[in-house]
Length: 134
Image 1: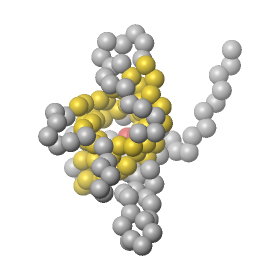
Image 2: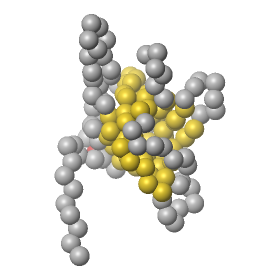
Image 3: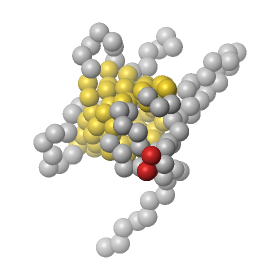
């Protein structure tokens, strides 16, 4: 059987990142692990199921290029078989900047990718749910 080729908007880089998910600063943080990242999205493994369509906010603390805030939407979530550490694989799409009518404020842009050979150590991605008041 022949597999279908994948067509993606941007190249994926197989880097592992520590991801922190949280809805509120008063709650205990929740951690997951990213498996690959591109300029348009990310795949990570999670203990908990995330529902397609849910919007999350990602804070990327990169000590070399400062801090980036990125909004993302859960595209898919699949139960993983044969793994003891994580139960779900999650794919998210980064949301592009959107200018609100009557306002100059916009959502953050997606992060810029480093080339695969220049990965810096200590990169942490913190994810939190966007509140409606923002």
